[in-house]
Image (cartoon, rainbow, N blue to C red; front, side):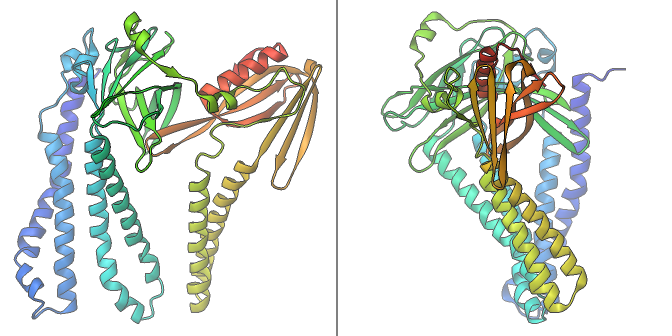
Length: 484
């Protein structure tokens, strides 16, 4: 028998309540029977041995964290559901979700900021005992205690991220989006007005991106896949106290609609960004998009001010009418390279520290082996990050000959083909990653040969760029485009 959405919500609330109680009640017990009664002794530091001091501090920290975590789960389980199940199953499902109940939708930036602050405080509380024990353990000759310092360093990074989030909020406030038409229309337009409660610097272009993302989870594994993506630059309208930006995207009719969160669902995400001195604007909001085929009004279209994205145009448009060699470079070439190289160096440094400064000095074979493995993983991450960035593809079209030159840090090769040897131009999704709030999906450009072989001629394209480039190349070669 199929379980209704209402029954699923009820079962989830019961689970959260019971599961949260297993943390909430022991946490309260530690606070009220161990930490709070001994607080005067802790503050006076009289008649306390080192073990007693650590025991009281640990009880306070664990009790607070358990109470906070468990209390949050119990609250989420007991609170009244905000969505109207009857409307979710009706003809206007967007009205069933409280956040989409009107044409004006607010972002959840303040909630995410609160979560970051909460996690930063949580992390620093659990890492504080490591600082108390550091000097004593180091005095005992325990060199492994140096690794424990990583936890307070991560805590400082989290505090910095929380402060940045706060500065962002103070500068831009809450972003609102008013849709026209409402809801956003598959087979029609997703359009509207972005409202910011602060004026942007004069002449600042605003980038608006609309993504249809499929979320899939199975057990502990989860993944995201961009089904459709489009972006554009728009000119903002500014006043002395606020900024508005009108955007418009024409959406094909064969795309999936917004769906409630489940093991597999689709979400339509609007991203708004602008590069500004100090704190950049970077916001994201989920929109209701359904197959209504509605169009924006003619007056709205006239007032929308799209701008030419010259940098994107230069990346997208290959000079396919030229017989000169040209670089084929995906606009996402540098995305994640710095982070990958940094993570690789950190892993390598930790591995070297374990293997040499601790394992070798202490003559601990297990630590030497573990450090060597850790360092090797770090080096591999660093190498593949750098190697991918410096990989280059160069293409020359001189009918009936296509010449591809492939270059890496350690050499390269040249491939020469006759047009008659090529069966199709191909595009292929090659993974994705999240950087901040933005989800990047990478595509490779390739050629399918008539002998069955496949040839990659460019990598790390965005969806918008790969579609333009593949179509232009296929037109020049008089071939079709195949999406793998």
